Structure formats: structure tokens, C-alpha cells
Length: 165
Image 1 (cartoon, rainbow, N blue to C red):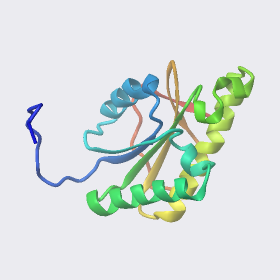
Image 2: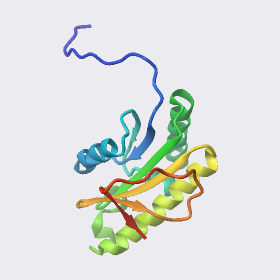
Image 3: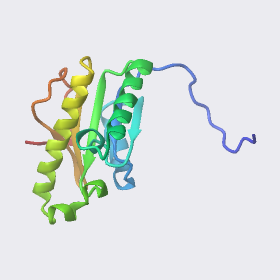
Image 4: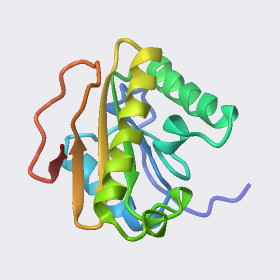
């Protein structure tokens, strides 16, 4: 092997501030990174896959859902994760984009709200000792999704998040 890039990174084991499930769409990556920093999440176990929360809420196959649950399980086991953030975003191609909702942003947001709550319920039913925080990423901000999740209390949100009721 030939070293092609040098950096210094801590080699010590760590406790994850959160496991974060989000889409790999590059359009949201900067916003997600900044949001996590604003939330005080410095050590995130990132689970970045096409569709993000869709892989739990309405997976294309059983493997997809099982894979994500195993990734969360590994984060909990290896890094003592107690907080899981699940995200989906506007105009996500795995949902057919905004066109699937005939350009109706409210219909899209309503659909994602249901998906995020479904993903959260699946996580809390599989992992009783975690808190789950669902968020919908739009191109003008990140919105907290309120609902019937049965999880531990969440920390107060910064001004970067808004609520989808």
C-alpha cells in the first residue's frame, strides 16, 4: 500500500451521540451536517442510504429493513447509542420525487410525516432504550415531526428545526 493522504484522527473508542438514518442525496448533506452540529452531535454513526427513513417505513424488500435495523443494533452495541435520528427529504427520488405528489408540497410533507412516524415506531418497538427523533428535510429548513412516538424525552431543539404538525 502507498499512503496517499495524511490526517490525525483519535483512535480511542467512543460513545455515539446519535445514530442518524438519512438519504444519500447530496442536496441535503450540508444541511444535515450543519443541523447535527447545531444539535451538539459530534460523534454520529451515520447510516446513509437511498431513501433514508423509507428503508424502514416502506422498504422495497425485507432485506432493506433488516439491514437498517442491524445497523442501528450495531450502533447501540458498539457505541452505546441512545438516540436515533431518522430523516427523509423533499423531492426524494426513491418516493418518485415531488412529481409523485403532483407538485403538492403539503401532500408530500403529510406523506413523509406518516413515513417518519412509522419508521420511528418500528425503531422503538425493536429497541426500547432509545429515543427516536424524526425530521423532514426541505430545501428551506429541517422540520421536526411531532406525533405518537413512544420514546424517551428529547432535548430541546435549536431554532433550525420547525414542527410539522
